[in-house]
Every structure is written in structure tokens, then in C-alpha cells.
Length: 184
Image (cartoon, rainbow, N blue to C red; front, side, top):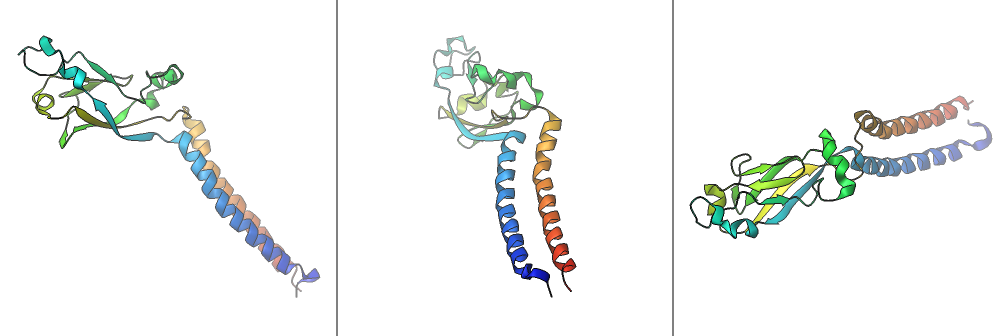
């Protein structure tokens, strides 16, 4: 038998604690995910009509691509002055760049060149000339604006959810132990 009839109260308190903890762990984990992981930008549309126009500099004089024209990605570090820190941070280099035009995927260093500050220079190749549309789509990964640049701070942030779960387990174990101890 439990003293003071507090068993029911403690069971209710433990249930509320676990429900609240389960909800909060999801929220905390979601908030932590942003500053510690890179963001993938899908299918950013780039119009390279200007690269086709005025290609008198092209060696064959055809309607090729003006290879001196650069496109800057929308989320590139060079787009806004407050993003300048991304250009200096090696963790924030644009990675996983995929350039497609219709069903054709372009090849890095052959059909285009990506600079560190997020500019794409399209080369005058048979693939880029043969494309029948000026809409090209790029997908890439880079840091979000609230990204944590130091590895140790990202590691600490990743541990917060785990420590929160351990605290919830310890609180639950404490309530169970207290219930068992108060039995006669």
C-alpha cells in the first residue's frame, strides 16, 4: 500500500511529464536542426538569355554562349553584404551543385565553372549551345543565415536533445523509485 494516497498523483505527474517532454524534444530538435545543417536549395531557375545574346565574341560567330557572362546564385555569399561571412567560411562553400537544362545535366568544369563566391560561368560547349530553352535549373547546398560556423558549437547543439531525453528518463526513474520506496 502507498502512503498518503500519493501514488495516483505521482502517476499523473509522470504521465504529464513524459507527454510534455515528448512534445518538447520534437520542438527542440527542430530548432537545433537549422543552425547546424546546410540547406539544400532545389531547382533555382536561372535564365541565361543574356549569355546567348551578343555572342559576337564567340569564335564561330554562331548563336553560342558568351563564356564571359557570369550568373550569381540567389543564395550565394556574394549576394548580400551581411552574407560575407559565408565566403570566408570553408564549411559554407557551395557544394553538390547540379545544373540541368530540360533533361540534360551539365558537367562541372566542362560546361560550367563555379567560383567560391557563388558565380556560375557557362562555357561555350556543344551541350550548352544545343539546349533549346534558356531556363536552367540549379540545385546546391550552402549554409543557412543562422548557421553555426564552429564545429564544437554544432556538436554541443546536437547533444541538447539527447541530454533532454536523459533528463526525462531520470525524472521518470525517480518517480518510479519513489513510488516503489513508499510501498509498505
